[in-house]
Each structure stands twice: as structure tokens, then as C-alpha cells.
Length: 179
Image (cartoon, rainbow, N blue to C red; front, side, top):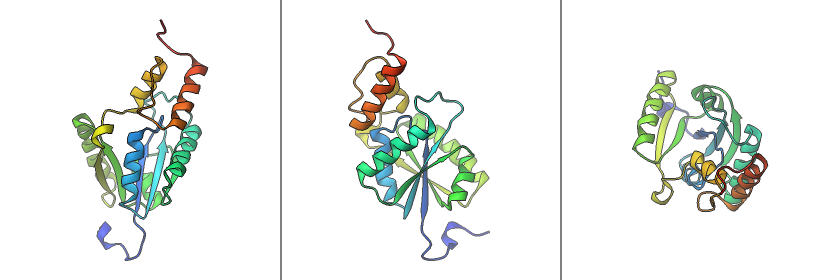
């Protein structure tokens, strides 16, 4: 059995950073920026998740992430949508690394279990965990949406462009709990 170390010299190291990115947050941006330094190409895999009720369509999320990448000036990353097992997607992309961000102990427990399962599916692809920047650790897309839905300011958690998109969506679907 070959390992990632056995790959042909000069072959690009490709990483996949998967997520729903609903919406993309400053925390996601931090992991993208740092993850892009570890690989020759970082594929941001925007996925569906049957257990979540997204605010934005997959296409809208892909456009959002693409716009953020352009604003960040990250040239070795691209956005690809997928609706499949992560390891099958990663293999199809030629990836040898899965990049995952960790915020807290609860994230670690879930991600550790997922990494173990993924290794059982394809042991040629390694999972790399990046700790979120301390100032960004509490940020979660779910909480950003909740704050926006109740009329709170999400500016500290997302870029101005994403803030405007989220606020426009909230206006179209209606705020909650207004006094």
C-alpha cells in the first residue's frame, strides 16, 4: 500500500476545506488563509448538509465564498460545490489533505470521530486540524444567522459584503422577536 509520502515528487499537494459556509465567517476566512499556506492548491468544498436548514442556496454560498477569496487575494484556492461523501469528493479532486478548523473541545470530539471514520474510508488522505484564532473561536455560522434573524449586528463576525447579503436575506424572510 502506498502512502501520501510515496507520491511522485513535484506533484502538487491539494487540500480540501469542506463546509456549508452558510454564511462564510471571519473564522472560515482565517482557516482558508492559513490552510492555503499548507498546500499548493486549496479547494473550498461547499457542500449540502441534510441535517442543516441553510439560509442560502448552494450556488449563493459558492458565489459568496468565491467573492471572499477574491477579496482576500488568495490565488491558490478555488471553490467547488459537492453533494457526496467527503472522502469521495476529496479523492476525485486529487487531494491528500482535509483541512478542518477547530474552535472548542466540542468541535474536537466531533472532528476526531469524523477523521477516524474518514481514515477508514480512505487512509491515503490525512486530516489536518487548524485551531481557530483565539479572537474568532466563538464564531459559528449558526449563531451569526440567529443574531441576524433577531436584529443583532453581525459585523464583528463576517465581512461587510457577507453582512449585507445576510441582512438582505433576513429582510426578505422577516426578522424574529422584534419588540
